[in-house]
Image 1: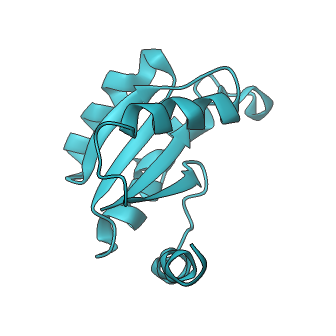
Image 2: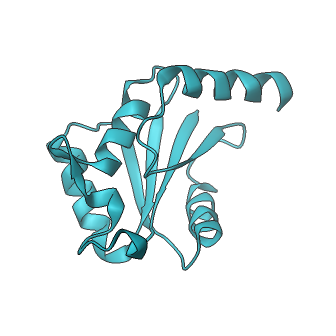
Length: 129
């Protein structure tokens, strides 16, 4: 199983906006949806997890439903730092997926990730572990 763990728990204070940057709309969609769509479209990605701000968990679920992100399986609360958020996500997956699974960690604000980059990352994992 290949899971995309997307971090989206930052507050985005440097942006000077009322909402975190992962929820700012670009081309009529939140940034996090653009990112999820890249992994949704990739045939080698089986599931998506989003680690986000606790008060935004239900918003992420609603957006995923609205934009037909069917691979979204988990939305969990992030931590105080990016590392803590990744740890929370990995701990949540620990008993949810087979031990031989691939977990791809990606910044949810980086929505321009291409299918080629995703494929290359998976191929590199298979080559080097």
